[in-house]
Length: 153
Image 1 (cartoon, rainbow, N blue to C red):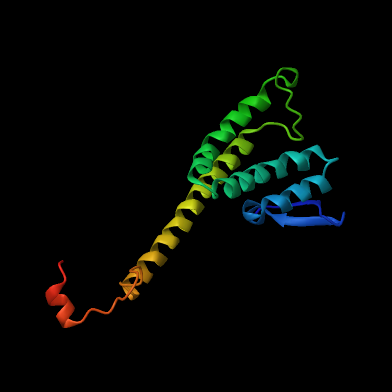
Image 2: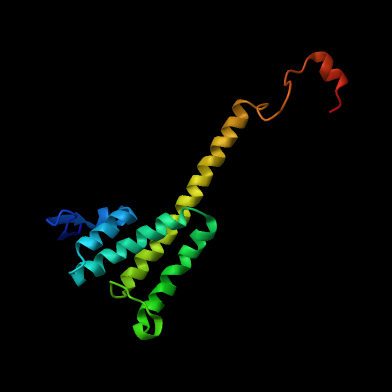
């Protein structure tokens, strides 16, 4: 496992593994970037995982956002590579292919998270329907033999 040492939120050195950074929530990564604002190397490293976390969390909210999250990293990378005078981009980190990679992975994770959530909701609804098949009917759901003979199907 690859580890790095950065400034923690309390200002003390923090040794953290790459595997932890890959799954860390966006807001915590944003806080770590603030704690390391005067170290460009740390900014560049943390930004990779911050982009991944943002797109993972944002893409999980809706299918439209998930699809946009798949395209966003490459557009953002191009924007950051253009001259700042042209784009107005005031980024804290330098553009890198690792940033593009991590952002794309976050978009994929967001899409996967969205689909997993929907699959779980659908499975729950199907399970409920099979456990109580008449639960969606209104009114009297009791059918007698006499009713079965006289009610049209």
